[in-house]
Length: 158
Image (tube, rainbow, N blue to C red; front, side, top):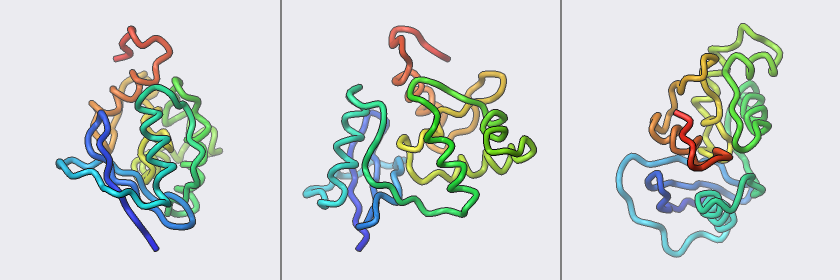
């Protein structure tokens, strides 16, 4: 059975959806919402780890994930998981790591369809020229996340 919960984060309200096989989706909401009480048992660990991330106490996630997507999307999302906390890569570099430099648009599209906001760190992918590029949650959130993960918190990246 699929369950969901809404939590408040520094970047707005966030919906977490999952079932016995793991977390399927974590999405930022554009509208105000109410926090879910009580939280379904199968979502507790993901919510705890997200709160730890926002509190600066966590740099990786270990809860069970089960995002839905095509085989190609899944391969892109697995590659995103390899980008270390506090680091960035470009769409071009990501395409090269996946074995096809010409797949840059497809890689960017799969990146944009990532259903696990923050956890699968699509926010760590930037333009080859170092610029912030499109982000489904809004560029201001991408900027916030990159600054949150910056090894020098007092230094602004963008």
